Length: 260
Ligand code: NAP
Image 1 (cartoon, rainbow, N blue to C red):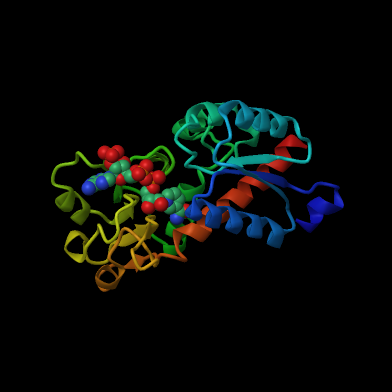
Image 2 (image 1 turned 135 degrees about the horizontal axis):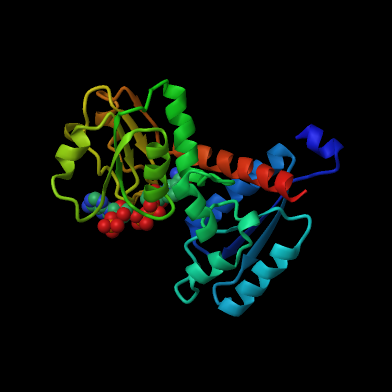
């Protein structure tokens, strides 16, 4: 980073948040904090709940043209009256550091990407750290969202894993998960994955961030019981979340270098 600054380049990230969702607020604060720690420049646009689609699109266009901003992140979910798809489609793909724009999604599909999808790429780093050789391994991703499940499956496939995606219509989910050498749970349901679903020694990655009634944050995996049989397991909080932010920072750096 110091080297870049010497060359007069400070990567800049704009974070746009609409409304008062408390979870989104926490994520945005964490992203801003990471920028600050790394010496990046960041701008936050906190817009009121009643912001119109036109106002939001105008801001996106302004940020697309802003020279000191290399990455644009619109925090999802947006309030119901706003059309997320149109907003994402209006972000300049070169500044789309979340890799949600269809151009970047397409690039991920063909394995030729500028920007890694933040959460899945963070998970790939965690997997690398376990030392597991993914070639031919049975990897089961639970969840098929555009931001986690689908790109996750793609990145695993690019590493020559044998990938199964499970979702709410999957039959025999328990048997499928039980076969897996690697399980990635991105369901959004507290304690969804239990010990009886997991093979001894499996690598278990918990993407879920569920707020319990007592206010505590909890993953999709029953950590207490699954940690007794898993070879590796990620905690919530403190597992996948920080890795997502790390990838976002990497993408912002890449964006700045590319836009130079
Ligand atoms: P999402 O869009 O709600 O997708 C959830 C997926 O889970 C869907 O594909 C759904 O299937 C599937 N599902 C729901 N109930 C199921 C069931 N009973 N059996 C099997 N599959 C089921 O959620 P998301 O955006 O992918 O996020 C998932 C979780 O990860 C959330 O808790 C979110 O907060 C968290 N998250 C964490 C990070 C991080 O950085 N740590 C980043 C993003 C998301 P259908 O498609 O059939 O409905």
